[in-house]
Amino acid sequence: MKIDFDDTVAAISTPVGKGGISIVRMSGKESLFILEKVFKPAGDKKVSEIKSHTVTYGHIFSGDKNIDEVLVIVMLAPRTYTREDVVEINCHGGIKVVKSILDILIKNGARMALPGEFTKRAFLNGRIDLSQAEAVIDLINAKTELSERASLNRLEGRLSKKINELREKILTMTAHIEVNIDYPEHEDEDFSYNMVFEKTSEILREVSHLIETSDMGRIINEGVKTVILGKPNVGKSSLMNCLLDEERAIVTDIPGTTRDALEVNVNIKGISLNVIDTAGIRVTDDIIEKIGVEKSKIYAKNADFIFFVVDGSDELNYEDLEILNFIKKFNKKTIVVLNKSDLEQKLDYDELLEYIDENYVLSISAKEGIGIEKLFDKIKELFLAGEIDIDDEVMISSERNKVSLINAKHSLENVLETVRNKMPQDFLSMDLTDAYSHLGEIIGESIGEDVIDKIFSEFCLGK
Image (cartoon, rainbow, N blue to C red; front, side, top):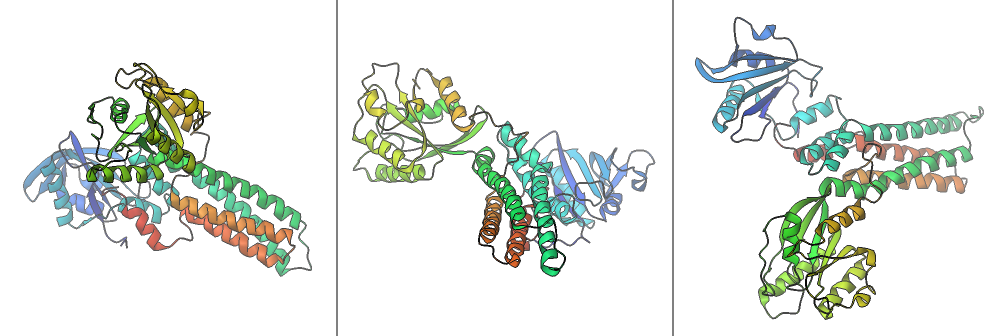
């Protein structure tokens, strides 16, 4: 996505549809010039007289035609989101009126902004780095309070600060090594192989910790890939309805009612679950149901978490045992839900515990709503053991950042190997430089334009 900074861009920055207000945004050096051609402030005030970061009442015109009554906010560079002159037009929220205003701006010299172009201009103008830019889209897509806070912390620069601290340590160490290489006759008292080993080990621990946060960061940001498994007619769809607190899935006494997967997002105690209610796993001659069973197994293999629903009023059979063996084989995080606790219990509990830890077995009645709150508490315990303090933790969430950290880790491990083997100092310098470069990718340094374009192409229009 090539950006011409001589262009002034415009876009609708609020969802298109009926609403109280909508906002049309412009950014670029011609913003005020274009505004002057279409906006008439109330009274005798001129656009050139509007003070920065103030709100002005008036009307948008197309020629002599009054288009809408608006409030205009003028923000002059560099104290703006893009570090360019920015104008925001707050108009009535109808589809026609907001589109008309955008069309007028384009007709008078603005260009339609590309997806994410405002934020890309902020990045290229040095207002934010790439990790903060990624946090913008995460904040827009946040589904829970935890994901909102984690995104906001990255937007405020917490991850950037940590990465810059690590890079500064690497840079200082590399400088000492380079002095020793270039001027061997003047031994640097701050340099020794032991010093390099100690400081690199410290940096490596911090990088490894950031990598360890990636799975939890992804779960907080994207949600937990969750699958409801079980043989037919054990209450999987009833459990789905309990999670949603509404009748979304069809519930009958006929086995095999669910033929295909039903996917929804639910917020349980601050944890976002992307839940898939799957077809019951059993041997069947029904071609359509057989396809559903195979899809259920594929979903389960790709899941982060499994609800395994068992009918407590019946004995375990080979279909239950097949699922238990699958869970054990792939070592999936699982809660076994013993459903139908309102009926006489016939299940052999001891046999079940041969496959699963009793701490993750709960009895419920999805039909009567019994035990659901305890189930929700267990989900929170499973994913937020010890209660994560988002405000104190620096956490990554994107796969791109994780890959960069892993590459930096490998380079740092090479440094330690070089020290152990007392290899030439040039090797230390090369691997430290590589680690420095990989960490720089996270904040947008030493990264290709194609990667930057890909990141901003995923933004919505107007942001």
